[in-house]
Length: 269
Image (cartoon, rainbow, N blue to C red; front, top):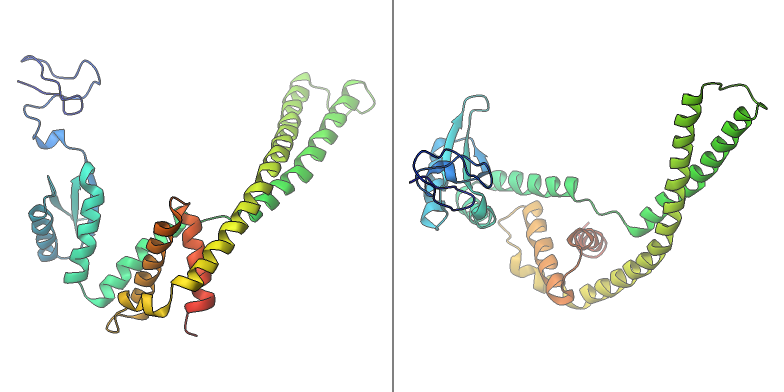
């Protein structure tokens, strides 16, 4: 009997698609078609891909696939989307045990860089200045534009005669004013957020000075590792301690705070 892989409903023979979600039915719920896959990693060597696949399956990850792509000359390892978080943890453990120092560094740095690209923290004060610029530019420009159109309508100026152009430009100038006005309201809330950010920065920095010492960080520092890998392990430890102490916080804010603190107080120059 066919099943819907999403709704987990059984259908009569002859049915091809799910009546609720439209998904193609499969004969069994463990059919590969029933599984949504997420790519875990591309690997250059077939032996390494095989070892990783075996390791993931041994660790309880379901439906691990390994497929070779001639275009990139790599083996793509994919797992059930529901298991991707656990698979990433296991892959890091596999990476530590299996790969060379250079390969570990390349992977960890690329992961960090990708994270920074997509989750760069912008300080509240910088946001405040951006919105302030919007107010000083958009509102005066919008008002001057409206005045310019009115003067054209009443015949004082004769630069624009088309009603369509006047309507379009009028809407644009009104939009400028709207952006400026909404920015004013945002400025008020940002002032409070700036004060909160300063307080958090001060309290966390003081806490780090008292609690995050070289002795603590030495627990995750390995003399056999490069400075770059030790930096990643040390900052990960700092983040773990901060989140444990201060609870749920913006992780991008914490990352930026750790980077600033490390460069000022811990980085041996």
